[in-house]
Image 1: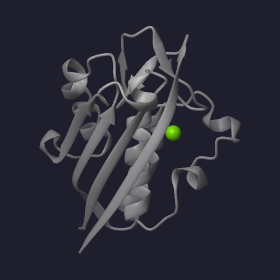
Image 2 (image 1 turned 90 degrees about the vertical axis):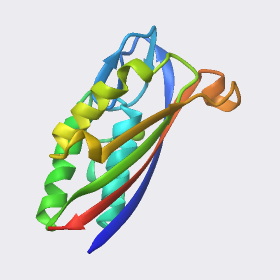
Image 3 (image 1 turned 90 degrees about the horizontal axis):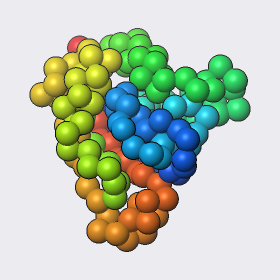
Image 4 (image 1 turned 30 degrees about the vertical axis):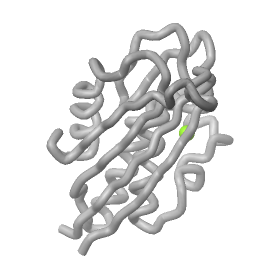
Length: 158
Ligand code: MG
């Protein structure tokens, strides 16, 4: 039996924060603002998985009012979500994602992100795909005010 889930997230770009995407720190003078490490890609993935499990959304599982999650690595949140997958008797079938960012160039970092996510999701790199696109200078991503990410996941019953 298969389950499919979709996730979407946005974070604002600000000065003086590290830029973390897919658990990988990327050299850039701006980073994403948020309660946790604001890893927009990992948040979209978490929401896709929670959606596939029919278990609500990321805010219900990791409230941004809870000091426990202040500055926390989103990969550790993803690890918690991996436990939910296993508790329900599923495993990851495949994950496909897109990040919209005008800058910096993300291509050199995609394989590192895939490896980190594969490790956390107890999957092989071939089960995980990450795409990066600009928005051709349009909208908030184009103006470098923020980044957004989309994720689609399929889970299969063990
Ligand atoms: Mg978020």
